[in-house]
Length: 182
Picture 1 (cartoon, rainbow, N blue to C red):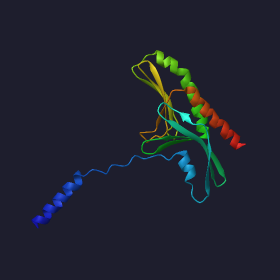
Picture 2 (picture 1 turned 90 degrees about the horizontal axis):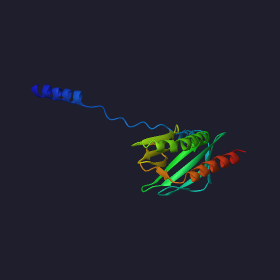
Picture 3 (picture 1 turned 135 degrees about the vertical axis):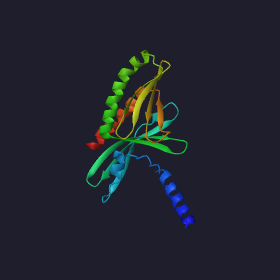
């Protein structure tokens, strides 16, 4: 009897001090994932390659991905960066791409002023609903532009030296989507 009481007491003690299991970070589904994972309809992916995007350390491939799902068509601008252990890909829906371009123009207008402030560190960025980031940081009197392709990846950042190249690539994507829509 004493043995069973001891066991019950130990069990109660162990259960009362146990912690809840750590909940996994909830990953929000992107527009691409929502559209491409629809069930009950046939989904077709079609890619149209664009010019490569050269960054400081690598060359990223860009394309337009057209998704046909049932009666709906959606257009995504994709940037794919090769990595050490795989590829990182941003899929930017057409309306978000238009917002990225507006934000890019605003950031370009602010960068010189931010550099003249000579802060210890300053970061100015735009983030889409799906986690794509475009921005710059200022450190030691110098602005460094970057693009972060995936929200949850550690090796998905492109550092951009040539702003004209990224701007022309964005515009190429918009023009190609508008051509494909007509």
